[in-house]
Image 1 (cartoon, rainbow, N blue to C red):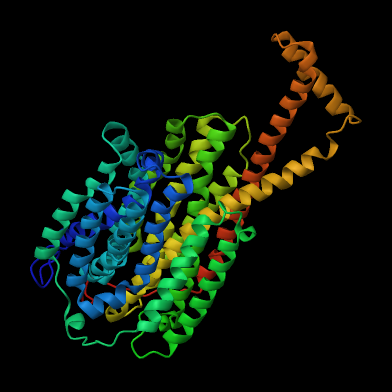
Image 2: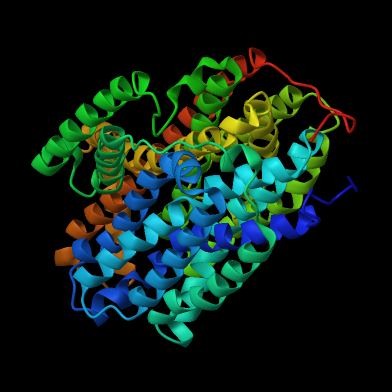
Length: 518
């Protein structure tokens, strides 16, 4: 067979482009709506909580369908299911843009999430099947570019479209891309023989129901937990009970079902299991550290939204530049070395961010983000290759579905973990810092008097300058408490990620060469 071409005569890079177009479209849609939320809320006369369901519903539907993708591909045929997913995503994008109230938008976003959720694992399994085993690092680099580029371009694209056109076009822009994806999939994607002859027709109805309820509720908990003060809310308590019960029953059912919707026996493979654990903590670190810098620079440093975006963007650009290098090196050297190198770099980045203070300049803030962006490809690409290299191609769809579910959950838990810990640690440090703020504390008295005098020099009346001076000190204290909370979170993220290096040592490396069969 000619290098670069499949049995059907289609160039492997054409196949890669074909599957990455819808994948990129789906990943962009996870974040593109965020910046348009205020416009959507105003246009549809919805409250803040109602409007956020347009995001939560999409993420929940995504999370539910991702682990089912491998089973659904075998049941319906991969090409047929891929086309159905793209058509559903494109059609629901049109309906989202035409939504007449918030309820209709949420419903259409659920449909969009169902259509889009399967595209990530299907695309990854097609890529790993299209490229020969010794080039799986390259295939994962192609997939990684889409994964990393989506969160970068999403907010920028959503903001520009909303400001220059309207929020409706955030959804309408998917339509021509979806049509192109449908046409390319019809011509360039084929089902492998092992899927055509699978013959599996029995539906795992209990597994389907329990997975949908368990994962859907879990995603809602992660998205709504901090907003509802976690377990102070009856909604969160009951949703947790339902999610935990459904997932426990799901595991039991799947282990004893002849044709499980998610084959949990994949976890018998030690490298696959360890790879999922490392991936989970890597994504907790990545998304936990991504959500914090904009909050830090806007609330504590006075940055504008544009400058806050500029703090994040260079890290994404660094990932895009590093991704092909990491993919190439994965095929040339031991992936374990690359993963350990990436983990140390990412942990070092988090450590540097734990040293931030209220006097940090733009350069000091941006370079750790660049270091994190450079580190992540050296974790994700070789880790994906190492985790999936020993999986038989017949089980690749199931394995990539699980792998992508863990990636999504790691990101969601990372965001929930960082935002919750930020609130809790800020309260802790505020309580500690106010312990000595009493009229009997000499440094506090001196500071209050100095602040009062400064205000008087600025034209504030003597009658209110005393109270205003105390207010300035308290405002400074609040900023310091939040700064210490940021430091705590980055320090913890650094340690958590560094500990996963031990797990990498026990993963098994599978060597491939160009002479191995495709």
